[in-house]
Image (cartoon, rainbow, N blue to C red; front, side, top):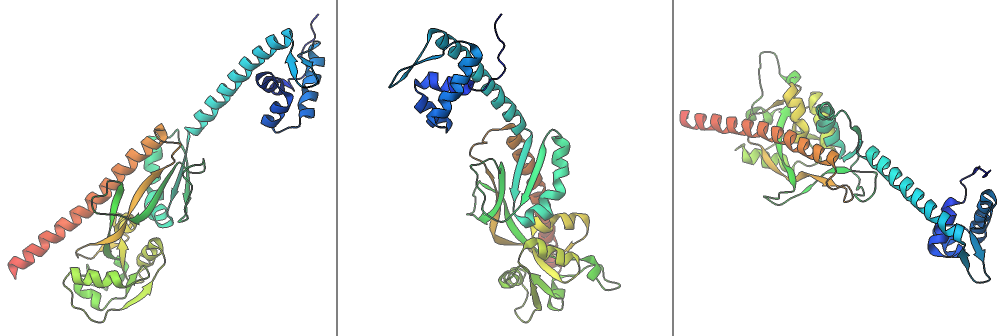
Length: 315
């Protein structure tokens, strides 16, 4: 009666040694010593009850039974490796790893991911909010949303940023329903660390130069927006970051002309994940959501232009 194999230890060593024709080369491939490979194969031969290799002073040679058995082992290992890769890839399709800048993740992406997961409940979303540079060549990130400079008409930009003036309705005194451009002379003004864009905003809206209370600066758009929501002043904020609070009524827009900013958002894809269904699905969803945000800004701008034209004709 044939003895059953009590251990599969040594099958990988056998496959490598048979394929390479050398215990030494097999050891190098498997990151072992030649002695360890030889010992594993010796134990396997004892389990099988027949020789797999003839040992010569300078080389090894498969026996007839060894050649037959090694061919079977090679086929089985190939099937196992294919099955493992298929299962790994199927798991990979179910996890979407997104890296986004802090402010965009906090104020725009996180509040909307529920919409995406309703469309794709099969996906496990992993969102990493970080402004650091990430590698798009390893498995830690599938897609990254990053903020940077752009040229006009750049097709790779999801949204060319615009700056708008926003405030909390809690700042309004009794009897007032809104703040206007003229109120900016008397209100505390908030910015993202530089008052340069406030001066550009004033100029774009025909406001006189002079003393404005540009008193507080913040290091991130998200922090600036939260300060405005808290009623600390009127913020000149990035539309993408203030949009959700404007939409929900936590912030209101001053009816003024938005001004362009130097940066915009891009969606970057891991070079090894191009064409995966999960990434195509996220990209399509993201483009649609950004288009809605851009349309809301275009509607506001059109209304402002219409009001400006009516005032011009009335004056």
